Image 1 (cartoon, one colour):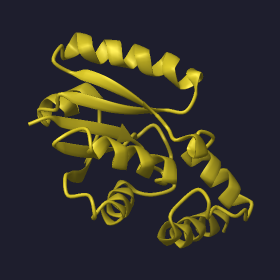
Image 2: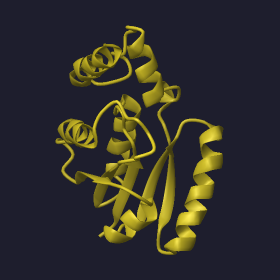
Image 3: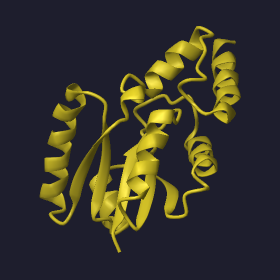
Image 4: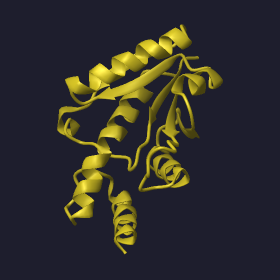
Length: 162
């Protein structure tokens, strides 16, 4: 069975992330969306909130499961007996960093392949940072994230401002 991991912080999940998840799920038997709990960042959403959002948004994809992890992606991949890492690329600048990580992971776990997927053109500009920036100024984020995520983002932004 080919098991792949699509890692990220997903803070918050965007249409771009969902596009990669949907497309990647067709390339493997099982796709684990690995939600990184990076203690060096100050996320908008807790790890549990992010996992819950992604589970709800991917419940129609039978071969997708969502798990959180800390530490090195390569260690998580070994633990889950994954053979493939899926990474989304928006621009050439993403590739420079991602290729270094892919090589380092492969040194640590030679059986691990990394597949780079380009985002759909309509999401090439989109990142969680863009979503948070627009939301913090009251901008329309309906083209960036699913409708059920919008009130969650707005509530978090409003609570941070108080």
